[in-house]
Every structure is written in structure tokens, then in C-alpha cells.
Length: 257
Image (cartoon, rainbow, N blue to C red; front, top):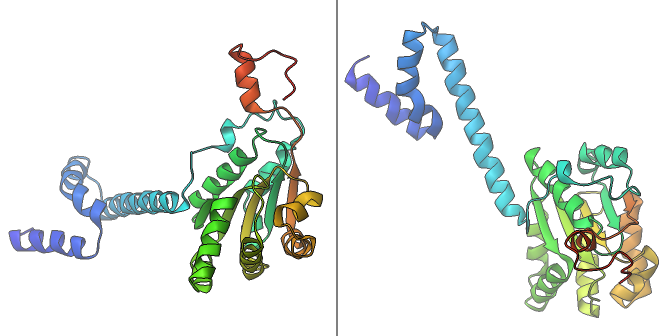
């Protein structure tokens, strides 16, 4: 290979944005020559390394865009501590068929039982599978939607959220929504209805959602759209945080707060 061909090859690889291919080419050609690799074997290896690198960079970008507050994995969830959860059902949800079918998932239960852990873990599985995911606290999301409505930019905000194939809306029910917030939330749910998936977590039963929205009619309309194609996971058990405090001896075994 002449110097001209060598320089042109590296230049063209950079133009094609084959960053990994270009960076490992020289070293691998030397290794391949000593190992008497064929041209096909060399190309197969270099292209495979480029693909792996691109996939890793793409996943890293999706994870950043998702905005997960922490990383939680399904393999780290303690199903033995929460026997009310059917592990097979979670495995079925983790197959991500619900995203392909534009269905929803709702985790209900008291604080500390692992709702957010499962929601984030499923979001990470979705990101790994190539889906665009976005995580939001419910109150923060509604506040942003209401602000957009006041600025006459609600349509743009909802359109921006539409690029995500999975939204995770965490902690519905910890703070009530005002009338404007409830209206904006309804618009978001209606826009995604039968088009894209949402995972919700809530410490309130469905019967209490009217109190969250301060309007039983709009709550019914929201629930109607959410539950039409939905899997509900009810978690009944102790708080993981209380469990850890018991281990540390910070609270007594008969604590019931």
C-alpha cells in the first residue's frame, strides 16, 4: 500500500464517520498479518468492532436523554422481599411487547416498595433495545406542561415528548394537580393514546385519582385512556427503606409508620 493510498483510506474512513474502524485499523492489520487472516476475516472484525462501538455510543446517548435519576436494574430487584409481585409478569413486561403494541404499565403501591426501581429498570431495558425513553417526575412534568400552555407552546412540548416511544411518569399522587395541570396532563395522555407507551408509578389506588386531579370527570377520562391497553402491577409489602433502617437498628421491628 502506497502512502497516498494509506492517507486516502484513513481520510475516507473519517469522512464516513467510521471512527473505531479508523482508529484500530493499523494495529489490527499488523496482528492480522502475523495471524495470516484473510481479507474477509479482517473486514468482518473491523466492521463488527465499528458496529459495537456505534451501538455503545447510541445507547449512551439514549441513556442521557432518558434522564434517569439513578440506574436500577431488574437483576438487582429483590423479588423475595416483595412476594406480592409475580416475577413472571415482570419478565413478560420486560419482553417490551407493550411498547411494540403501544400499551401502558402502571405500578401501584405504598412508598418504598420498588415501583420506581421497576419503572427505571424497564426503561433501561427499553433503551438497550433501541427505544427512545424519557423519565419524569409527575409533578415536574405537569409543571412544565402548564408553563408551556401559558406560553402557548403546549403543542410544541407535547410534540417534543412524542419522539419518545416510552415515557415514564413517576410518583403520580404525591402532589395534587391544579385545573391547568390536569388539563395539560389530559392532553398528553390523549395524544399518546394507542400510539405510544407510558409507565406510571403511583401511591394512590385508581379510585383516588379523582383527588389527584381535583376533578373526577377528567380523572375518569384519563384513566379510561390509560387502562384501555394496560397492565397493572399492585405491590403490597414493606418499604425497602424501612427494611434497610431495621438492618441498621435505626427503627424497631414493630415500626408501623
